[in-house]
Length: 33
Image (cartoon, rainbow, N blue to C red; front, side, top):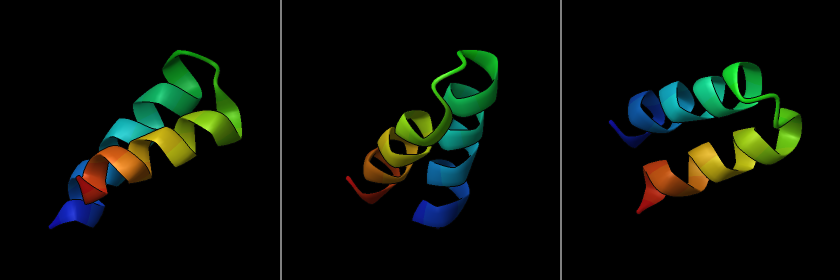
């Protein structure tokens, strides 16, 4: 379940807000919490 939430947040941060790898990491960490 956390992969679904984390990857959605990661994709938004990485591509919409132009954070690239940093956005992917933040999204995965948010999904784990």
